Image (cartoon, rainbow, N blue to C red):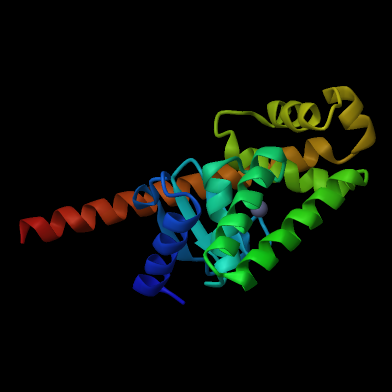
Length: 197
Ligand SMILES: [Zn+2]
């Protein structure tokens, strides 16, 4: 699903799940490569209010909308949004979507109950880099460590690649932001050109 149909479904779901959220201020597009997507099947650029999805599945759109209205990570604020979405979907008769969202909630709750793996922590660093545009790599480590109840030095001891991962997450997030800003400028220039002619 692309273009206008994707946009339409995105708006429908946004209205149903979070009626007060201003989805019209966000852009939605299919992603053409994994480099841009941090999550499983989509990516939410909260800085530029842009959502990218691999597929047009309702569950992907709903997941990214939940990031848009909460945070970039999969912590409690995000889970609250996910639970609320599942309930709204169920009430509206979208049973498949409701079941898929409930399954996601259960998955994230179980993952949190177990001790997070290094891979989880490194993914958190990537999500933090997208969420905190002004944070340097060391601040990303501090933020993620605090989220999980560690000090930065405890975190570094436990997750040995933390500094390398934070640095690369930071660089990649900045690159994405740069590309996204360039795209916006191109669109604005194209729109300005059309108005003149
Ligand atoms: Zn996610």
